[in-house]
Image (cartoon, rainbow, N blue to C red; front, side, top):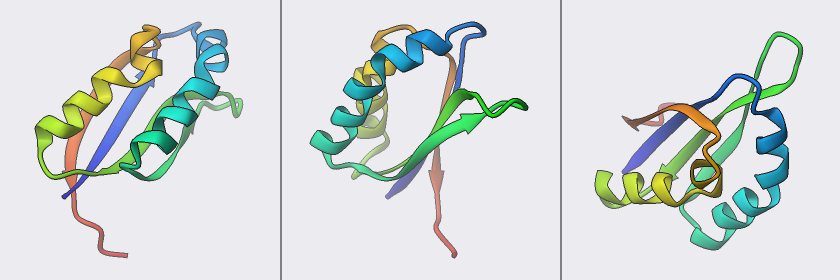
Length: 89
């Protein structure tokens, strides 16, 4: 199943995002569950959140992945949503 992870950063946490970006990217690569991913941008073009499409067997697997994301562990996110997604195009 595909699951969209939509996370919004805490205000003022851009430096936390930058400091943990390499670990976050390595986590995505090493787990092999991310099918599409990229940062959300604010009106000034600065990173302010994440959109990751995971391919998992269960929602629990998606929740576990999100909990262990280095960005989450660093306390970057103000909110995280996990929503089952159906690719059409």
